[in-house]
Length: 558
Image 1 (cartoon, rainbow, N blue to C red):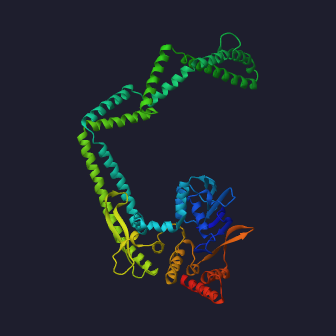
Image 2 (image 1 turned 60 degrees about the vertical axis):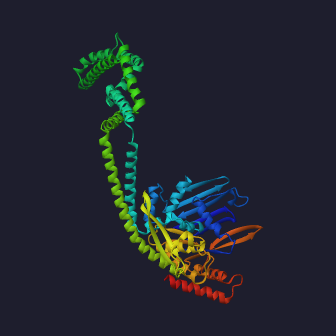
Image 3 (image 1 turned 45 degrees about the vertical axis):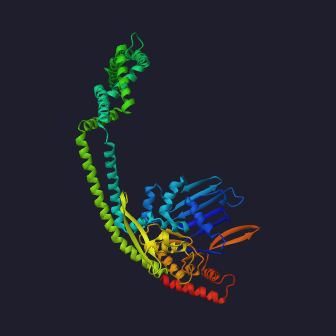
């Protein structure tokens, strides 16, 4: 859930910080106090659009920080898949806003806006006027239905995989439609490439050996000079080399070894040294001999290496890649030589994948239609609870023109809010205020299904009052049992349902206007509800009404 919001230098906010609780968090305040700025800052932190005029006058930068904690196992797994790991059980999202640019961070690490939005989508769901309007687009209706049905979501993934396989086969079949002359040209070119690789007869082992030999030949002169010098010190002609010196030492020690045990022991070690030195001398000579080569041998190695490098420049960076390329071309050549059989097999393969896809689409559609009946009933009941007394709600199914990764269902929500009227698309019937209540009804139905932990509602109470407002407050309380809910409201009925209540105030200090936000205790909360009820003058009667509303709300929540 969202545990803390910190805002600095945005619009009327100099600096504000608030700790949210679980359940239903209500924000209230006078018109123009800056309620929209508070939730707007949350949207900014989550990657919303930013312009320089949002900064507080005279400020060089603005800052919004969100701290999330008490995360579910499901959310932790989703974040882990994005390489985001909580620190001390928390995830902090921040966005620093400057003129013309912004910097976003998750747990102190700078991230792109797209990555920020991806993470935010797993942590918080904001529903403002814009989000309510999304109900007007029927492409979103199918997503709501699938989210309602877990079984549909599982089969939907199978449909997606089958659709991908079908489209790949379809594309391969389309690409295979070439005339005979084009195939003959391709076959001739493939035969040339295959022949060039196979005739070279190169292997990975030979290529490595050739490269090693070439490098040794290139550096052989310098190595030979070093080895000749070393050999001269060990076993060179004339006196003064190590072999002669050790030999003289052996002869000098021989007589002493006959008279003393310690001398005999040292004499044995010296014999070992003489033997090792002799072996080393022979191996050194053999190695020196191996470094000698003729110009013809060098030319032969260089030519072979050039041939191998020529193949690499055309067919792959390594010999393994060259041989793999050759095998692929041999398979393609075989197809071209028996093209009718290949086309027949490809048509059969495409047909089989389409049959599989069609079957899965039909299964998915049947399940969706079954689940849609349940969703219709629950949304209709939710709408009636929100004072849509004569509402009719239907989920209409049509078939798409072709296959899609979501199946073949074209789903649209239909509604009638007046007796005798046939249900029509939402876009033709619902107003902005009605859309907000329809969205709330859907959210209450989806409370057990929705996996996003924090929900924010802005303008949920547009155009409602009285009994309808009471119904909306009850729905908000219901959702608050399953999720953390943060809601801005101007209705006392909704404010009374708060598990935690925050007031937003605008004050003028030293001719500077500032917006502040603070948590209300029980007495302050009652006075704030009374303010909403009574306006400028708060009488004892209004206070008693506010207390009664809190008591009734507490009973409803229980």
